[in-house]
Amino acid sequence: METTKYEGVKINRLKNGDIAYYVRFSKDGKQHQQRVGSKFQGWNEKKAFNKKIELEHSYVDRKPVKFSEAVARFLEVQKSHLRKKTLSTYKGAVKSIDFLMDKKVENIAQKEINDLKIELREKLSPATISRAIMLVKQIIKFAESEYGIKNPHIDNFKNLNIDNKRERFLKKDEILLLKKALKNEYECLLFVNLALCTGARLMTLLEIRKKDIDLKTKTIALNDFKNSSKYQGYLNSETIELILKKWDNLQDDDKVIQRSKRLLTERLREVFNQLFNQNNPSTKQKVVIHTLRHTFASHLAIQGTPIQIIQKLLNHKDIQMTMRYSHLMPDSGKEWVDRLWDKN
Image (cartoon, rainbow, N blue to C red; front, side):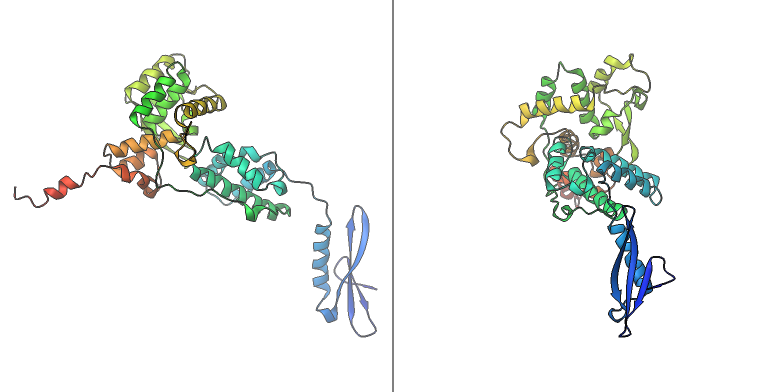
């Protein structure tokens, strides 16, 4: 057998004029030799060398990769080619899939995806849950290329069917019922009032600090973690009255909602289920925390608020997202048409 210029590749010249190619590679500290092909079969030294590299990697015993490890690596790689704003959006989205962090990437199957849906359905809208599942798939595909592992289930992951045409919102009598049920639970009542006068999402509300509030102008600076942006909201008198009860005891950097996310969301879920979800099998019509955002937008539309103003107050980047509320707006154009050709 003859050596070649390629390390680990040897040739054997056969009597019939053909050349057999052999490669040597290591596994567990031991040397292995394998015939990979012949010249008559289209092989050459370079092709044999590439096969050697492939065999070496295929023989490596890889450690299982945790999803948390893949997420950390994914975000690190994104830093090199994404804008800071887009990267921040990814980081915010990753928080919604914490549930999977301890799972091994190759073991995440439809069961884990279903468990994730169940975990998120009381906290997030169907559209946001759908985006979370797409992010899981994106990170798993990244892990496959980065670590050379294979998830056999990913192509079978089932997403949610999204229908944004109708969104459940609370009527005025239901809002009164909810506030009455929470009258002795200050933190929950304050959260609900903040949600109903700003339309902000859960994480935005939980991150509001004293320094974000201007009582003189009745305005509030809001952080939109989904879109990685800041925008302005407005406070009504009822909400300001609740805030004032703790105002003097807060430092500038203190959070206004001081109850933990877990305790707050669990308690609100209990109240929503008791008041509104007892005989409601439809997931679409269930009242959840995100319903408060739809309630804010829906009542703005009902009272005839211009769709562009609703878009601004919700901090929607695309007005098409806001158009889901347009069917609630009164037929305010009729009066303009009626007097369009008035002689007066």
